[in-house]
Length: 144
Ligand code: HEM
Image 1 (cartoon, helix red, strand yellow):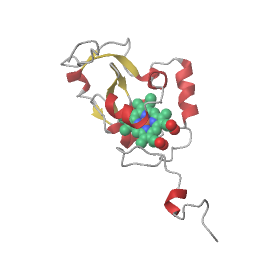
Image 2: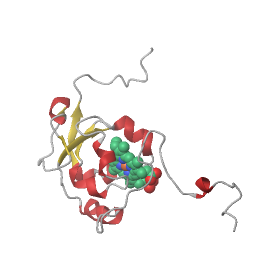
Image 3: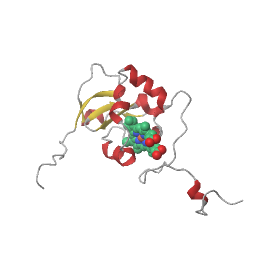
């Protein structure tokens, strides 16, 4: 019985969606009730599950203090989020999220799946604007 496809390599027949920088190359099995649709129900309700109310700015120093699974703050694109409530819902698994715990995960996120609508999905986890100690040099109009 020949292998599916014509590559002759069984590896090529395995569906693995991955990023080069991620050692965890397959989607992890999520616990029942922790699928994307379950999370989107929370998103649609417009709830604040960040643990901080009212929302407020977060400095880099403060962000760095929250780096455990149960208390995991991460900055993405200039905003600080409490990612703990999302941990078990993340299709890539909690360990992947933890790689940016207490840090700015923007670059890593962009490398892994920049097509994901982070702002919408993480809206319930938003704490507030992120204030890095040193302002990022992102002024693309500035000459080198
Ligand atoms: C920076 C830390 C993160 C890392 C290292 C990471 C890593 C991963 C990995 C390895 C996958 C599986 C990729 C695949 O199946 O092709 C994944 C999937 C996914 N992640 Fe993340 N992730 C991070 C942050 C986030 C955040 C903050 C969100 C929420 C906005 C998110 C939402 C998703 C979604 C929706 C998928 C499924 C994507 C798809 O099927 O195309 N991830 N992630």
